Each structure stands twice: as C-alpha cells, then as structure tokens.
Image 1 (tube, rainbow, N blue to C red):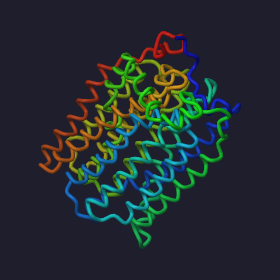
Image 2 (cartoon, rainbow, N blue to C red; image 1 turned 135 degrees about the vertical axis):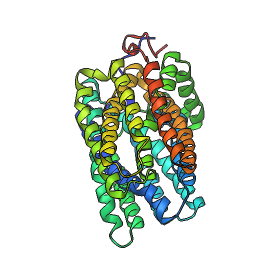
Image 3 (spheres, one colour; image 1 turned 90 degrees about the horizontal axis):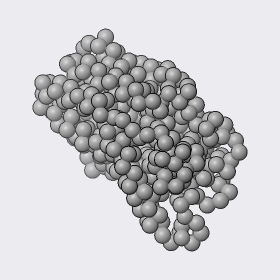
Image 4 (cartoon, helix red, strand yellow; image 1 turned 90 degrees about the vertical axis):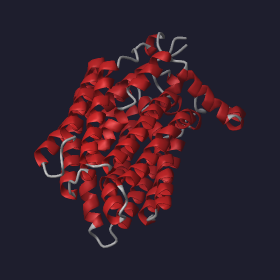
Length: 413
C-alpha cells in the first residue's frame, strides 16, 4: 500500500506547522530544564547523601530507564489512539508528581516508587512530543526536530548549574525536585496551547476507540513487528540510549566532583547542540554514514573514559566532546530515518518499538555496569570499555531502515 509523506493525523489539522514546532520546543525546554537539573545531581544524592551502594544506584536508575522504555511498546501505539496533545498533558502531570515524590524519598522502596512514576511520565511524554514534530510537515520537520534536540542540550547546559544553586539553598535536594515538578507542570500547560485535533486520531474512531483501546494498541505494535527492515534497525540501534545517558552515571561513580561533572555535562551538551544544524540541513540524518559516525564517536568517548580515576580533567572533557558529537549525530539521524520510514498514522507505534528495544538494552547495561563498579576499579574500567565495544559493534552493523516509506516500498503494506 502506498504511504503518503509521514504526518500524524491529529496535529496535521493545524495549518501552521511553525506554531506546533515553536510550542513543542518550548515544552521541551521547560521539561528538560527540570529533568537535567535533577538528574545531573541524582547519583551524588543517592551515593553520598543517602549512602547507597553503586549497585543499588544502578538498580534505581535502571528501573526508571528500563520501565520507561518498556512502557513505550504499548504507549507509543496508545499515543496514536489518544492523540499527542492529550497524551502530553497526562505525561507532564505524572512526571511532576514523580519529581515531587523523589524529593522526599529516602528508602530504597520509596525511591523505586518515584522511579516508577517518573518512568510512566517519561514513557507518555516522548512519543507525544515527537509525534507532534513528525506531523509538522516536510517544511518544518527536520529543522523542528533539530530545534527540539537543541532545546534539550540548552537545558543540559543550564540544568546542572541551576541544580547546584538550588541544592545550596537550605532545603537542598527537596527544593531542587520541587522546582523540577513546577517546570513539568509548566510544560503540561504549554501542551494545552496546542490546537485540539479536528477529527479523531488515526487508527480508531468513535465507540471502537473507547471500547477496544487494547486491540488498537496491539494492532499498532503488530504492524511494526511485521516490518522486518525496521525491526532489524531497532535492534541494531538498541545501544544508543545507554550510550547517550550512561556518561551521567559513570562520571560521578568514577570519583569526579560535582564541579567537574557539571563542566563535563555542559561541554557535552554544547557540542551536541552545535552538531544539530549539520544533521538537520538537507536531511543528512537519513544517510547511514551519519549514524555510523555518531556510534564511532560514542565508542571513542567510553574508551577515553574507561581508565579515568576522578582526577584527570583533560581526558574527561575529551570524552565529553566525543559523546557530545555522538549525541548530536545519533538522535536526529534516528528521528529522520524513522519519520521517513513510518506510515503516516503509525509514527507513535514505530517510535514505541524502537524506544522499547533501546530501553531494555539500557536497563540491562545500567544494571551490569553498576555491579561491576562495586567490584573495584579494574572491573569499572572493563565495564566502560565494554560499553565502548558495544558502540563499535552497532556502528559496523547498522544499515536500514531504507528510506522508501514515501514511495510505498518500505513500512506500509
């Protein structure tokens, strides 16, 4: 079946793709500012303030990541049914509650509960925001996603210093998480500024959409699982979430202080933001070499990071630059190639399956690396070198998906 150019039905009713892009970028900035101001200091809080072992820290972080991306398998398809605007509002409310809970949690059980709530909110947020961008139209899609990711990197630069300031203001971590909850509430309010869809979301209608939502979700997931080219692509790119996020866990565990870790994350984010225009221009992200180059840079970053002991600032910044280049190439490349490949009414489903594979890999990786850090410096070095080796394998293995959905030879049949 011939598939039109990717554009999700709900936001496609809005004649102004620019308005959608501007609003979603503002949402991303508010949400990520709240997220990264907390996450940059969460490991130090768990490790030093609460005295948790590295393996327990890995369990809590891995539980959030793993559950969030596991939920994307059904939630991506659910976004196609509910509509991106509604899903986004729910996501922000849930995430705000999760950060509020994280600020008062002290025991492992309470921390895991907060991780679960944060995971649910994150699972709802990502397909909602990216579905809106995928629907903005060919004239705005690539540039819109570049601005979306650039907003994330701006927040990554600004978030850690903001977190340091808030931690120093008396209540400490509780104040920081409270501010993060407010930022997510602001993001939810911005979702409400988006126009309501003029017709029901694609994939279900009327009573069927209310009475048989699970059937609709399964239909979306089954459609993706039947697309062998895309499924292979999702499996080969599964390490990308671990490669993008694990440096925020590894740097504090290696013994670097808050100042060095903050500088590292800021450099990483600035470099990644600088790479965005290159990938967005001319839809370069659809070219396989861009993704492969990003994975090779990620591998190099972890090989540089592996032997460090918490004192070498120069190599740490080199690792940050390499990881920043990797993120700047990998994220928009995957988005552009998925948007090109996925059928119009199934972007959420395709994104959900892709993110599910990445999240499961990240969960297993975080758990394994956390346990190896507890075994001593030699094991920690081997763990980080192993992450780099995984990136190398992915770089040499990645191929599709073929960019043929638009002319009917790819995902739609």
